[in-house]
Length: 425
Image 1 (cartoon, rainbow, N blue to C red):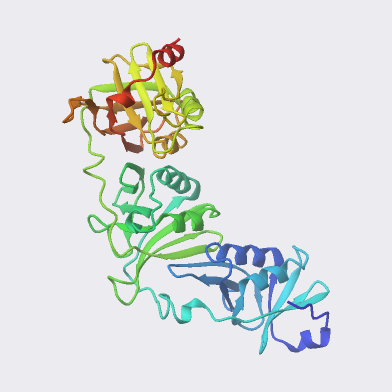
Image 2 (image 1 turned 120 degrees about the horizontal axis):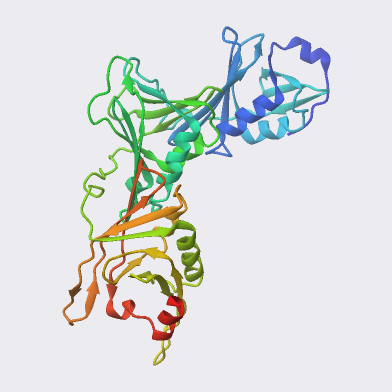
C-alpha cells in the first residue's frame, strides 16, 4: 500500500468524512474479529454524524458505529488489512479525512496520504445478500456485558468442538419473561446458567418456549470487548423461518448479527432434572484442582482419572505410563481432604470434561452428587457404569452442571497397595 505523500490541493478538491484515527482503527479491528482477511464496508451518515464499519462473514455480520464529521456521505468497500495497516502510519489521536475515489479510499491527514484498495464483500454472494430484518417482531432486552460474558465463560466449559456435530458446538439461549437461560452440552457434560431479566417482544410479552441456538465461538468473540449494557435481539429476515439472526449491540456502537443454527440445540431438561443422590462429597476446589493437575499431567492416553472416596478422604489416581507386558502398571496418586460419610466408592472421570468445569467455579468448595450402582459383567467382573454426576458450585446458585462419569472395570478400580497407602498417608 503506497504512501502517496501530502497533496493539499488534491485533498481540498475531494468531499470527505473526517474521523479520529484511533476510533476508526478500533472499529476496523472489531469488525474483522471473525475475518481478518475480510472486506470492510464503510458508510457515513451526514444526518447522524457517524461512520459505520461493517464486515460480513459466512454466518456473522459485525459492525461498529463511531462519531464522524461528514461533509458528504461515504459508501465504499475496502480491503480490511490494508485499512488497518494504513491507519497504523498515522498518529492515534490525529483526525484524518476519508475520501472515496475511483481507485480506492484516500486517507488524508497528519502530514501524509495513503491509498486503500477497494474489494468485493461477501454480502454480494453470501447469506447476507439482500438481508433486511423484518420490523415489529424483535425480542429485546439489555444485560450487563460483564455478567453475560461470565455466563458464556461458564457455558464454554461444556461446549462441543466436533465440527461434524455442529449442534453441540452451539449455545442454546432460552428467554422467558423473567429469566434468561444459557445452555451448552457436548453430550458428556452439560451446563445451564439462569439470570433474572425482564424480557419482552417489541409488540408484547415473549411467546412461550422461545429459544435460539447459535455458534458458541461466534457469540463469545463478538461480545468479548463489548461494554456497558448489551442489547440482545432475535430478528427475522424476509423468510421468518430461514433468515433468523441473534443481534447483539452495546452502547459504544459495537454490534453483530449471527445466523441461527437451522436445528435447535437439544433441551437439557431431562439431562439436568433434579434427582436424589446417595453419594455426596464436598471438596476444596483448589486442593482438588491441584491433585488433578499433578495426576493428569502425565495421564496415559485414553485413561480416566479415578476418584476413590472413603470416610478418610479422597484419593485421585491415574495410570501415568503405558502398561508393560508382564509388569505392573505405573500409577500416580494424590490425596485430597474430603467431607464424605458414605460407603467407600470409586468413580472415574474423563480428564477432558471435569477439569474445565472446575476452572469456572466461583466458590471455594464444590459438591459432587451421584448414585453409583455396582454390577457385574458377563465375566463376573465388578463394573461401575458411567453415571451422571452433579457438580455444584457452593458459591453460585444460578448454575447447574453435570458430567457423565467414566465406566470402570475392576482392573481400573484397583491401584497397587503402596500407591494407595502412600496417597492416603
